[in-house]
Amino acid sequence: MTPAFAVETNVGYPILSALVFVPLAGALVALMLKGDRALKAWALAVTLVEALLSIPLWTRFDPSTHKFQFLELSDWIPTFHIRYALGVDGISLLLVLLTTFVMPLCVACSWRYIDRRVKEFVVSLLVMETAMIGVFAALDLVLFYVFWEAMLVPMYLLIAVWGGPRKVYASIKFFLYTLAGSVMLLVAVIALYLKTGTFLIPELMEQGYSFAFQFWVFLAFALAFAIKVPMFPFHTWLPAAHVEAPTAGSVILASVLLKMGTYGFLRFCLPMTPAAVAYLAPVFLWGSVASILYGGFVALGQTDMKKLIAYSSVGHMGFVTLGIFLANQRGIEGAILQMVNHGITTGALFICVGILYERTHSRLIADNSAVGAFMPVYVAFLGLFSLSSLAFPGTNSFVGELLVLVGAFRENKLLAAFVIPGALLAATYMLRLLQKIIWDRVSGHHHGHDEEEHGEAHEAHHRHLFDLDLREGAMLAFLSVFVFWIGLNPKPFLRVMDRSVSHVIAQAQAAEGLPEGGMTGLMNALFPSAGHHGGEHGAEHAGEPGAEHAPEAPTGHGE
Image 1 (cartoon, rainbow, N blue to C red):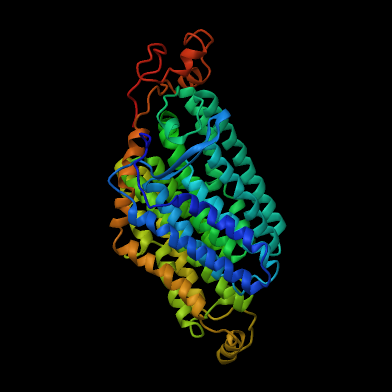
Image 2: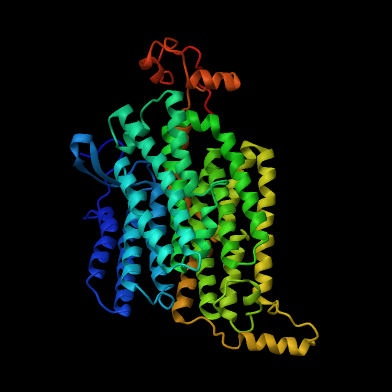
């Protein structure tokens, strides 16, 4: 019997279980294979099969309902009410598809670069895919947490084993930040179970919690997710991880891992802690603006291409968190679309940097200047993805950022006014990058040389460069299809998420029991006197409809 929170969508086999465990099975097979080329071919085959297996999610999904689809539900550890529960709605569907279509590119972009410990590299990639799809498909909190943690070790290894000169520093910093967030996530998971006796996410969404309980649970969730996004000021692990990670690691980080944080805000914070979200929304809205402006200003001063794109990610993800905490239709739709857009565009930019690094062995902008004459096809793709990154009309990012800005203007015009400079900063640093990579001649110490000698030195410096091969061109051409598809016809993507977004907004607007009276009211709500609410039981239900105790907590203050 299908539960009330789901609708039956049958494809003839457990499609989500297949998507979760096919990469894991592929990793086990890879352990028995020999030969670097065979291992890479096997990884590419597994990820391509995974992408093909995910297509029925798109073709069979019913966008007319907000309920979870492709449900798989069975007991896992009955003693603790832990279930094996998988399902997707219009929000998680897009992120599962993003994951399955990006992973073959991660294998392909590593084809030439990864030449040592290839077996371990392939196993790490495939285990990562299992963990990431599990995070987006899990409908049980314990299952979600298991997949969330399963991502940590393979990503750590990708940076620590195949990373750059400062890989140990970057990998440990990534590990410690992520682990700190995971501890807070575990605290929230345990608190919700002790309160409700269930780990099933759709059931947890329907519970009524007091404002005090929501506040503390939200803080635990928010810290875990803000680190993962990352939001300013929890962002410092990201540039180090991006710069030191191999190209595949950077693509996974940008395209998928950061989205786990914003997905957590949408899946847990807005539906489960609406009163806390409504009360603290200004903090996170202005924090998002700070991320946008900070990421833009710091990116403007970078001389390393990877660092520039890493800091641009901080700014772009600021648009996503801004849209989420606006908690209106346009804002959240723009945020979800921007999650997909950022995965496509920034993943493509990291692939572009990796392609150039394989040729010049440098990520410095000055060392890679004026390659346009030697790599015309490459710079055409780089130009396209740079225009997408700065949200040029007709590209995918333009639609997402426009929706977020519309949502911001409807909610708070002052907030929106502070966001606009962030978009201008993106245009500045991306166009500056393009100008130097395509036209500016290589920098160097040419004092006393005339222009002709300088030009000869430049030509000699880049004489060994060659344009894209078939593998590289196919990767970038594939991603460019989505840049134009979403940019020119976003309707199919918006239609898929529409009902799910409306349902999340309805849950977020059910905020009740918000404290009044500034900091004093907040302290009274969080630390009530022992008898003020008639004991612990009364305090727990102060925010529930029909609760007659807690007269000081007015209801109907949802935004």
